[in-house]
Image (tube, rainbow, N blue to C red; front, side, top):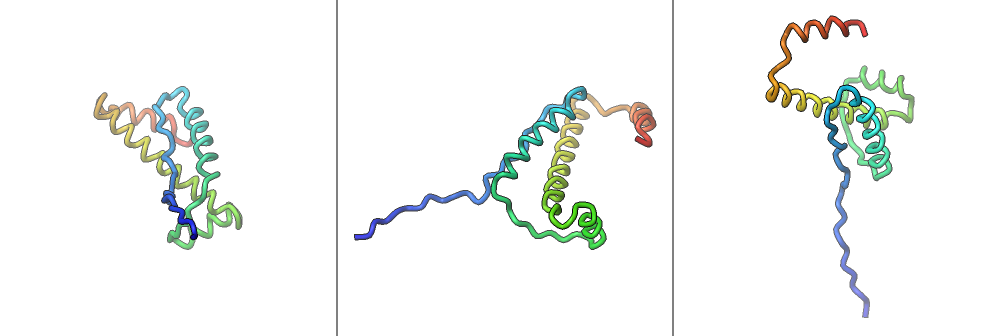
Length: 118
């Protein structure tokens, strides 16, 4: 008599969100970079999910010229991660505005002038 074995369901994707990082201007870049690299190594060692996206033709050509024939997936993954980090930072800055009040316009103007051309 054949033996019946029940299969356990396997989740389609077990990818986690990158770690949330509290913002500390003196250490933020270094810590975010280190945490992102750890997260990226873990996540990229997992199975990848194939996506289909549409982008403007000129953008696609520019990216392919820059990254070569085998670098597109990595470039797109980094761009997607970068956008998620920007959204997370934007949400954090919005929280700070609500909690501490918005940055005064004069201070923003001084900061923009100081960073112009960099």
